[in-house]
Image (cartoon, rainbow, N blue to C red; front, side, top):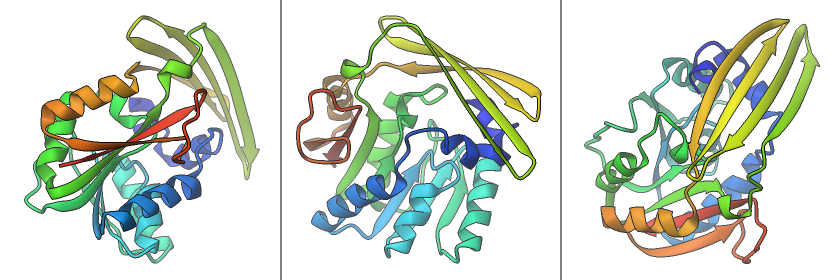
Length: 240
């Protein structure tokens, strides 16, 4: 995802608009779980342009966003300033970070934890160390058990205010990975990247979380408690 974090960082929100992100729905679940666990401080790992950190700050949480992309952090700070939100954003590598402050909760949303270059076992340990005793970690990921593994091509585009943006995604799968070739065309200039995502299912996530010391797991499907066999996404809540 280096292209998205650098060359296309300026258009990150436009690309998000082509996806099925539902910031309000996602944030509503976070708010529900946080209230149940008396959360006040939140670490947003792989925060991108800060959509969750900003949304949570508006709800009264003290949110800190962490991302390895200086462009994303710059954009997140600018967006928070535009929305008059008191969110904190720090530049840092989730694979290596160590923060003195301890948080009530940490989140890693929208499949970020399973994508390269994140090394998810290391990130999980780092998050565990960044939480207070009893703190919670929420992972949001695709429900890979319900995803068709057939090769496919998807095209999206938008035109607005002098911007012409087109995206073509070609996916293929192995037993353990999705390999995505993404071609972006910005005002007729083409940029390509390869994104590799680990196909980690619910039970495998729980195994990794247990290795780091997490316990007391809760599972949500498409941001609700109701079990949906064909849910597109799963959210795992784990406690330190």
